[in-house]
Image 1: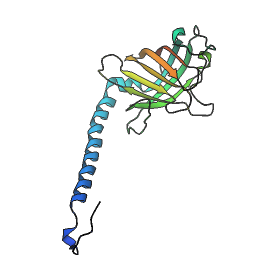
Image 2: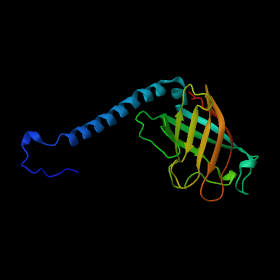
Image 3: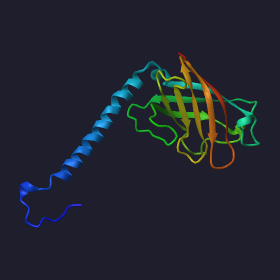
Image 4: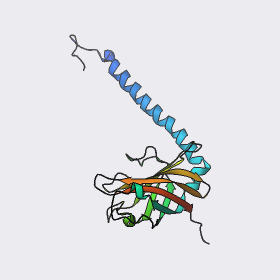
Amino acid sequence: MWSIPSRPMRRDSWPVRPVLVAASVMALLIGCARDEAPERSRVLDDAEARRLVGTWVVLFWLDPAQTITTYARPAVPVTGTLVFAEDHFGRIASAELNGPTHDGVYDIDFRPFGFSSRDERAVPTVVARIDPGAKGDSLYVVLSPGKSRFAVRMAGTIAGDSAAGAWRAAAFSAGGGGGRFVMRRQRDTP
């Protein structure tokens, strides 16, 4: 907090310290934002990141040991579609996934597994992050991030035009589950 000077302040003796501190903080924030941009560009320029863009067919299998509901039919796989675009500006964020590199929409009905991943009238959004060169999982996907329903989290590896890994869904209420998934890029038809 500034103190009132005991003598009148001259125009050229304005308190410099608060201005310097504020300028330093702003420079630090701008510097941090600029440091993130080259890393983000490097990731989005990677072949894996470019390969994720497009339409994917995905199959989910439910692991009976991870099922929380009695309404699930674990033997029946759930099939759907994911559509990804690169998130160049990095404005999409969610509590479930830090630093997404891609965003998009999906069309998947999880009711055979005993839960729904979104409200009936909600836009079915998806966010994803590619970690090129990562050991282990290199693909992270969240269906319906930040929603009151079950956010489905997927983690796996991407190789060429396919990806595979594990998924899980949980919420505060009963239901949900987990298992494995396989994704394959849908080929464009002429």
